[in-house]
Amino acid sequence: QQQVKQSPQSLIVQKGGISIINCAYENTAFDYFPWYQQFPGKGPALLIAIRPDVSEKKEGRFTISFNKSAKQFSLHIMDSQPGDSATYFCAASISSGSARQLTFGSGTQLTVLP
Amino acid sequence: DAGITQSPRHKVTETGTPVTLRCHQTENHRYMYWYRQDPGHGLRLIHYSYGVKDTDKGEVSDGYSVSRSKTEDFLLTLESATSSQTSVYFCATRTGGMIYEQYFGPGTRLTVT
Image 1 (cartoon, rainbow over the protein chains, first blue to last red):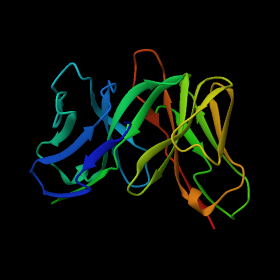
Image 2: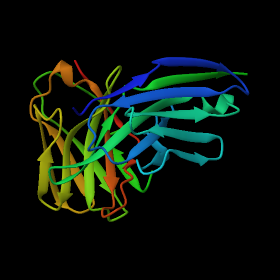
Image 3: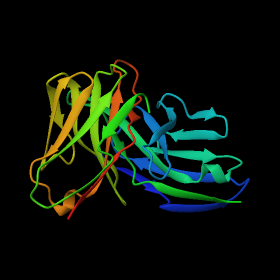
Image 4: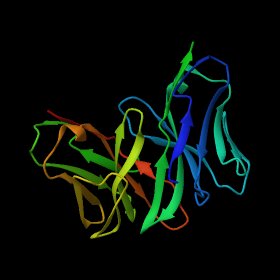
């Protein structure tokens, strides 16, 4: 019920291309869906997030598409750049116990070739 | 990094020894979290705190304990380290209310030999 499934595990894209990472969840009580970007040796950094009352959110080259009925959401990186090469994690948030908790996907290692 | 520091940043220890990792924040955030990151598993919640002296277990809490005596500090203790606890440990904070974002520290790489 708490699992978030992320695919693909790794992704190689040419500079200027579109990178697409997909996530699926089961628990319909999740109500906040962030994406995190992590560079080697660093902590994850919040990239963009969406709440389930909207189907799409765009911030610069990064877009989240959200399909509530299918329980799926995806990250699109337009005009991918070598500097976007990092590991990306989707997550889903739920109020559980005494605090709001995040459940993470397993991560996607993105490589953007110059 | 929302004013979050972790110490030590790297540690090598032997099986059976106790280890304490420290997370320090300067943002006065109410909530603090400890995660571990392992290949193929993303980040998994170990313990979290919802206030001073208020803590609760996460998904993978066995073998770990935590304490929070001040708002700014959250300690993670491995009472008797095992090789399966070799991992990268991240602390995160959240301010609370309707703000759901969590902010992560730089991590501690722990190796148990």
